[in-house]
Amino acid sequence: DADVTQTPRNRITKTGKRIMLECSQTKGHDRMYWYRQDPGLGLRLIYYSFDVKDINKGEISDGYSVSRQAQAKFSLSLESAIPNQTALYFCATSDATRTGSYGYTFGSGTRLTVV
Amino acid sequence: AQSVSQHNHHVILSEAASLELGCNYSYGGTVNLFWYVQYPGQHLQLLLKYFSGDPLVKGIKGFEAEFIKSKFSFNLRKPSVQWSDTAEYFCAVNANSGYSTLTFGKGTMLLVSP
Image (cartoon, rainbow over all chains, first blue to last red; front, side, top):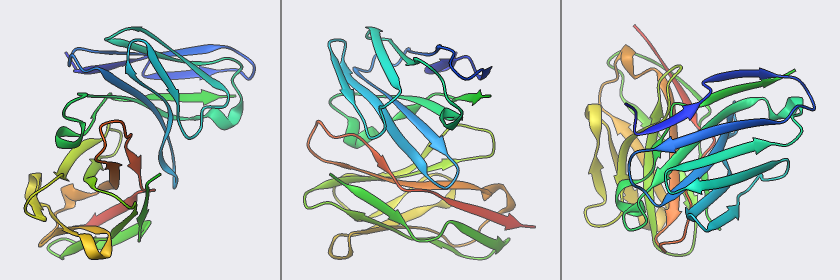
């Protein structure tokens, strides 16, 4: 099984619908992150959580919300999806004490299309 | 806050050519530096990292990078590329503060022709 699992892998949804992307990890890491990837823009941070009770906005949090249900689970919600939220979404984790030494571990991504 | 600039958006090389991808960062303090690779249709994988010590770091698949603090640079190199190196490459940085997040450059798409 993958260390960081994202579901669904692909999703097509309609404008205005609420959608949740889920992420679970078996790394035992404290920290979890949501990024979106757009062609030519790289990865941009949406939200991050350093532990279960900690939630922080990233660079592009408008239109998104998150929930850290447990140390191993971090979900991203689009309350009312719009077409410019069409992107590839990545969840990542890191160890609180070794973020610098080991970097992040990424999930396989969720390709979201909003029509 | 830190930022990362990658010099080239697209690079096209023939097999066996040498590769150098530029990366510069902006941050006033101590940083950790990374190169990630994303093969077509896949997620990001760590290629190499620098957090202290020898500024010349070696990664997987024959890649290396050199941290030049005075130039705020962390360029990625490979002496001889292969067709299988076709991928997108991302430079990333975080401040060595314990509470910093990873900031990515916009990526460089490398196409290696056989």
